[in-house]
Image 1: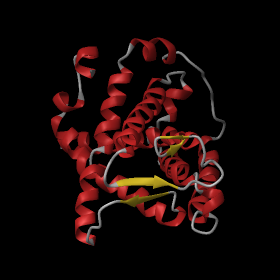
Image 2: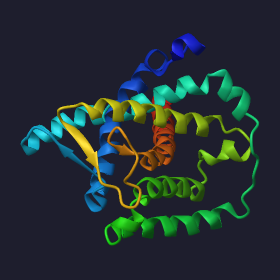
Image 3: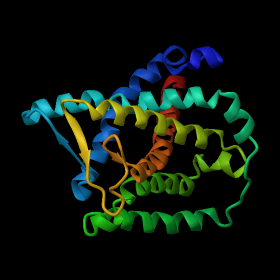
Image 4: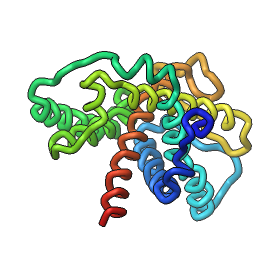
Length: 230
């Protein structure tokens, strides 16, 4: 669809970068699997595997997360609706951004550590805190962030990232529903009105996750470009 819409897609425009997304994606999602060990919001059922089999069978689908979300984001970014509605949206300024970033960094770090102590109350920070920590570190190091274009009124990247994660998440949940090996959810306070296996309010987790995918993709992109230039 991206090729039909704009004549471009990651696979054909930047094959080296696109291929690099697969191993990075595996590490990226294993990080969330690690955090889930504390909150136990989802669990896998189905055939029994050894530890080695589980690792490889899980790593393969994990490797598709970033390529899927970032490719979908690229397609959405080129759509007329996103261009017209989100390129001149809400402007804002942040006074003392470094001070704010330092404060949010501290709170997010403590909150992320707290999910192991109060998992039933802080489970949402599994998705929010990593995003805030990365952005705050970027601000403190003087690097560009996903917030910069938003402050200037350009919300195309943010909206396309969020929608891309929701679209991919919808397909993942649909495919999971009838799978032999699958995941099931147990989310405190909001576990009702399931759409496939996911509670309806649980889909809100895809919103910060889409931004996280873009932030990681942008970081990798800058590293890739530096290595290519050198």
